[in-house]
Figure (cartoon, one colour):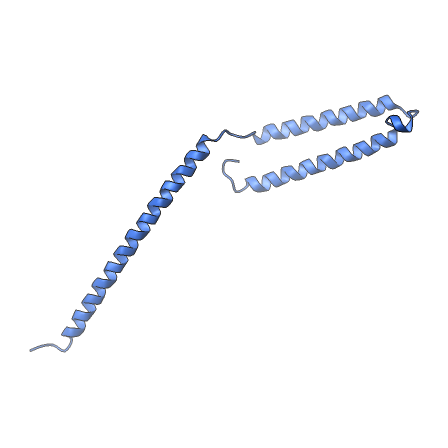
Amino acid sequence: MRSPLGPALVILGLATTLLVGLVLFQTIAQRDDLDRIDERLEAISQEIAAQEPGIARGELQRTLNDLESRLRAWMLDNIADAGPAASPGSGSAGDADEILDRLDEVIDRLEALDRRLDQICEGVPIC
């Protein structure tokens, strides 16, 4: 006596075997992709390790602060040297004010650049 469920069970068994085979092939393909990604990550890590470290953030800040201090001192010395009786063409107080305004603009731009570098470095572990 044959069971009426026999052919259905055989078909179900073959379908399960086919499904397991497909899952196995997919896993092998993903493993190869993972190996390629791992190799690429190792290459990138070696490139990063080989690069020379850039200027440190603290050192850059000290350099910018020192530059700002020197520029301000130089401007104040030149304004004091010019005096109120200086001629308009030789660095009068109005010219000095214009130069100080320009210097403040440059400093503002440097500070904006520093803030932008902070934003960029937030997501970079080596920055």
